[in-house]
Each structure stands twice: as structure tokens, then as C-alpha cells.
Image (cartoon, rainbow, N blue to C red; front, side, top):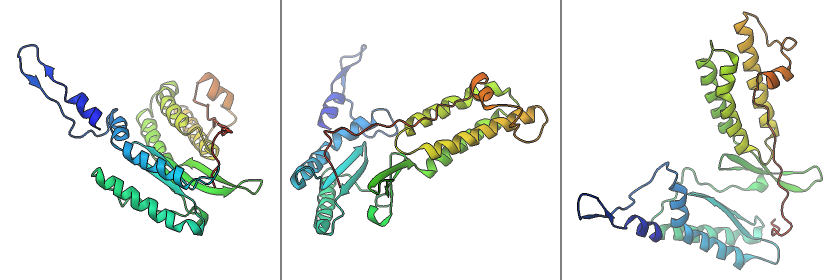
Length: 254
């Protein structure tokens, strides 16, 4: 944070006068620079958690892991009963470090969950839980949060309503960028089922738009093929999930 203050405290000379004006950041909300300011200000918190990771590491097994983006933070601790003291210690040290920086914890949005009990937590728009894989091994499940999908559909509904009487191609030009941005963000993890739901929902809305323009009923499954909708009309169709295999150098966790 001191680096940012030094930057903003540099004298700025106005062309008409000889007086210097000192600038200082008071607050920054919903701005592009906000994540940068958070990263600089919470750097000491990262250092503390990195030390906790190294001190508690047992060979290739990690007892503590964390992820942070700006002011959103998730801390994972080994769920073994013998590590109950560690969970309390990490929380205590974290609160102490945040108090030094005069950062208040939002208690309403902060909570402790037990993934072994089937609980889940949200982070950066995703919902995280653990499930059994087909091979019977425990694995993390990462899916788009329900409220994020609801917000997307609500936004699309407004576009469909606004362009109700417009040509279908103009409607598609409006919804394609929205779909592309949302899908590209959530195109990781296990989003296939969610993508399938959104694709079917959008396709039905487009079919209803076409049928209404021709004063017809139904969805026109036989009249308008999917090849025509996604090919000739150019409706967004790249609902693909990107799978990134884990690196062999990544430390194992349990």
C-alpha cells in the first residue's frame, strides 16, 4: 500500500501555477484498479498464509491451502480430527493480521463449511463441493452458482423483451456477446450441465421469437433446424468446457 501511496502522493504541477497538488487515495470502489490496491494492501496476509503452508507441510501433503482474488479469500485446512487445533489457529492468525491492517471481516458473507459433510462454498461465481468420481475417489466439483445463472437469464429476458418486434438477427446480435462472455468465464470445471440448460433455454426463446413473427404456435422443431439456427442465423453455440490437466509438479493435497 505504501507503494501506491507514494505513487499518488507525487507532486503534480499545474501549467498555470507554481503550486504542487498532492493526491491521496481515499477509497476506490468498483474500479479497474481495485484488485491491484487490494493485492498490495493484503500482501502481508498472503505472506502469513504462505508461512502457514510451509510450516504445516508434511512432505508432499499440504495441511493448509488458500486462494485469494482482491478481497475475496478462501482458506482450506485439512479436515482430519487431529488438525482441529490448526483450523482454529489459522482463523485466529488470519483475524489478527486483518486487524493490523484495519480490515473488517464481513461476518454475514464469511462462514466455515465442512466439505466432508456435503457442504459447499461459493468463490468468484463458482460453487465448490466434493464428490466421488466414477473411480470412487474424492474430487472437487466446481459449477456456476445458481444465482449467477439466474442473473444471466434475467438479463437475457430483458433483451428478448426489448427486441420482441425486431428481426431475429438483430436480437441475436444483442444476446451473442452476453452469452459469449458468460460462457468463457465459466468454461472451466464442471459447467456442462449448466451450459446445456442455458443453450436449450436460449434456443427455445429464439424459436418462440420466430414463431411469433410468423403468427404460429409452438417451437417449430421441424420447421427450423438447429443447423439453420446456429449456422445461417449465427446464434452463439460454443458452449464448451475447457479442461486443464493438473501439472505433475503441483503438490498433492488431501
